[in-house]
Length: 403
Image 1 (cartoon, one colour):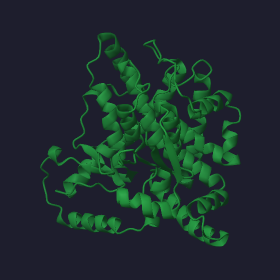
Image 2: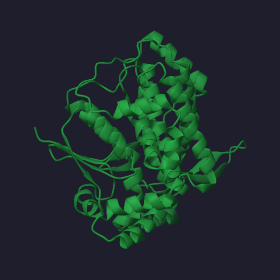
Image 3: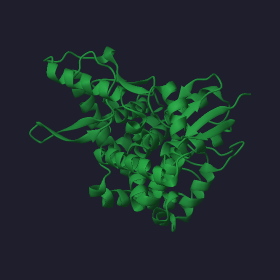
Image 4: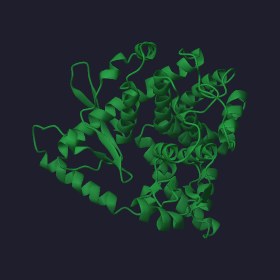
């Protein structure tokens, strides 16, 4: 059997998440670290952009999204599933996965990177530019480090939010440490999607001494990190058999809902706004201006969100559209009510976001008529799209770390 090829990057939660998953799936993999040369010669020609990780299948198909990599392996390789048996457990798994990918990962990257910027920058320079001397490595790496910090700041993970990011990480570690006192994994004795997503986020903390200390007293979390990342040929554990969730996991679910769902719903508004202002265009920009309604019903601009957040929400909503047995449906509804999102099961975004050819696009089949042409906005959007297409590898460096 031909081996898979995996391209990963230093400091990338998505790379850690994917590597651990492929070990668990027990598929043969040859891994390569993403240097500047590898990005230029092996990644950009396949994806037409710079993204990491990249999995090249034995049939020479390239996959760059960790969630789609997991889906693909689940469909093409034998082995246990990441999908829990109960419907409301599937919802919990997807919610925690979305929270980890969209909120927890950028928070841990910022805190880890910011705790020792010089060390992180030096390690990135060695990783990306192994053929340059140390001085040239640092010169290049400092430019890319500044780009990464700007990308995180735009997403709301900057120095102004440093205390909030550290507090969020600390809360997650504390909750998980209590949960893992009596549970091997998130939803029982077998890992689900959430295990690998949260692993990718928290494993970054082990990269620097300052953030490694955040895990020092969390013995159960450290054990779980080792278990998720261990190479097993088989997994014999089962998912949780009880309908109810442990109190510790309920606490984490509420935290995830509080931090992920509002920005995901804002992303739905932002995608609809962008589509109305760019009729006929499909490819969405990496970030969108978020809109939040005031009490008077007027919209006020604030911050940025990603179309990816809506795509993750759509995957989450799929679990709410399942035809479940009565007991499971009641458990799901009780959970939504406790979260304060009972209406989520009837929610449909105004536009649908698709991930095709490694980019996020608006599904024109869901397009609704808008009231005006917004010609000037169209022109600005077209110019931005062309500028992004012409961007060099270094301009897209944040995708190497954040996917």
